[in-house]
Image 1 (cartoon, each protein chain N blue to C red):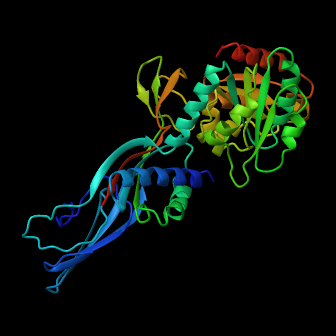
Image 2 (image 1 turned 135 degrees about the horizontal axis):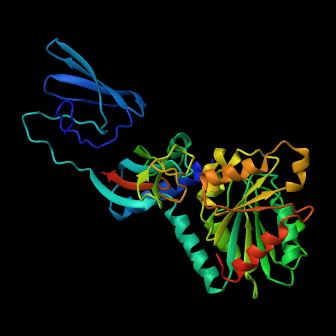
Image 3 (image 1 turned 90 degrees about the horizontal axis):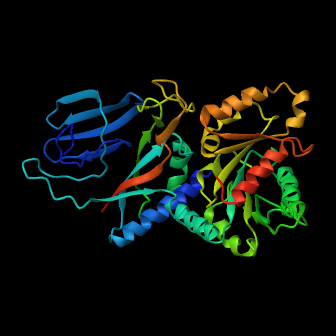
Length: 113
Length: 299
């Protein structure tokens, strides 16, 4: 259940930015959740309010953009999203691919009052 | 503006929770998200007209807003106090920054760190015991061992010529960069060129935390089943090296070693795979040569 650690990390980060901006309340948080980030949305949603209690993020809405794994093929040069967890080019079946999207779990922005 | 009713609510891309708000111009309404799936969201929008009429409609789209207010529609929208801070930072940015510092600290001392990750019981500690024996006199190594409880591993690994420290993570299911950072100074003594970080036995959580290692090494014992890499792809994709352990047991199992290799490569096509038995020594030579190369600055 490392989502609890992740929620703690996020709340700490948000509180720092909120303090810097003089905001007392965080209304909404936009998150990018990659399919290969190792983070599950549901346990994160469970953990977040527990950790956020008493902080400016207490009542914040979490908005997730779930990003599939995208690979770029070293053989044909095209990008594709193979069916996870397979790491292969959907176009030419080459395995000489780089993962270009879908690894990150990041906070894109937050809306504050 | 709210896309549905033009009520002046801020709108954005993704809709997450139900909200309600009221207007003082003749109708109240409630928005409720009732379903979300890959195809989008169904958003029910119910108008209750004070004049007695009642309109109800459902439509699918995505948007978001949350806050209540009241205003007259014939006035311009009130200035919103809410403002957006663009962040674009990893949720684990703090851990990653400490990991980057660890990496620099180690590189400055010519130390290569290996983060060993596997399920509990896959043979990390026995592999390390035999690895330290084999490296003794060739490459000075050190070990940070992580477990939820006990220093059993540190005691098993002691007396093999390598400084060892144990981290007891207690309730935590993984090591983080800060825990490693706090031990580097005591365990990486003069002459150390290779640091083994034996993570908490867990195929899920440790994969998300960079510790500052040169390389992640995933272990897969032949008793676990060939499909583990497919079931836990985040770790096996993130590890450029995979050690298949306990191969001496293969004659007693139905495990297909070729299938093990295939599933590792399905999630990490360029994985470097070692097949070893720490107990019999089979395959240990190639693993040790890889580590010596790593200590000498190789990939």
